[in-house]
Image 1: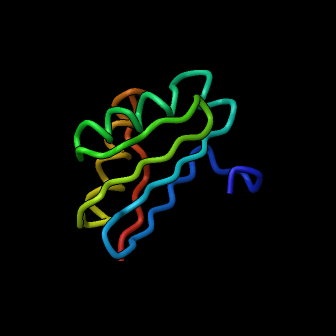
Image 2 (image 1 turned 60 degrees about the horizontal axis):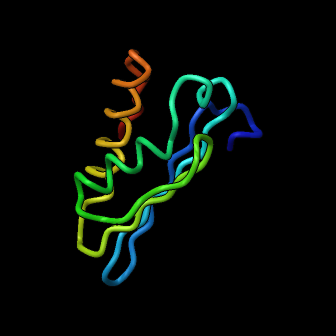
Length: 91
């Protein structure tokens, strides 16, 4: 998704006893924020394990958390750090 022109890509997946979130950012974004810092904040918030580097990070939480809640929290942290409000698409 980054190669197709996205600034940030977030992908969440749900497993039996765990939820995961993966993030990638392009150079324009990672010059401003580190996804590793964002995902460390998410790990603390959701009591999980997270980390990575400026352009790529992952989070694993060993409990049932609504994926939409996790994605919105990630987006809120990213928006706050960038000082912007992202466009949202909803159903």
